Image (tube, helix red, strand yellow):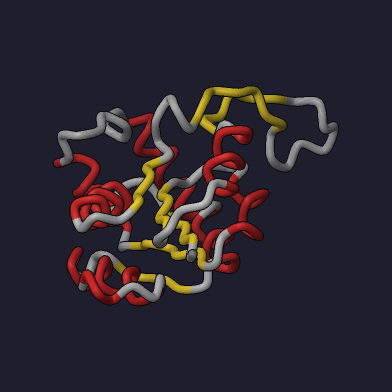
Length: 170
């Protein structure tokens, strides 16, 4: 059974993709929930002293480990973008990055109604910072990338289904 992680910055379409995979009948888990994620103090990236911590919305590692260890008869799709997700990369068959231009991301975040994150000026500034600092790290650890600014939702989902080796539901 293939396990595929769908990751990317806020506003790249992770929620829409994972929702569509669920509609098509796949095991599709959005980890941006209290069940899968929690606020936790983590070391500040780049802190030379190693003592500074800040709160971060990270995966509940015991729950993600259990999820990935469980047997699923068909492909499992997991979406999320958390600072501790790299610990689980060896358990995924594929890591797929969703990306889009900054203009597309900011427009989507402004228009979306399912998630309030990114509406404030401070949150938008953080998103812009993460596009510069986090997205390049995701890019080098991903197997494949889809630009959701130019690729339709159906095309991305069809490609993910094909990657999982289950094109019976394309």
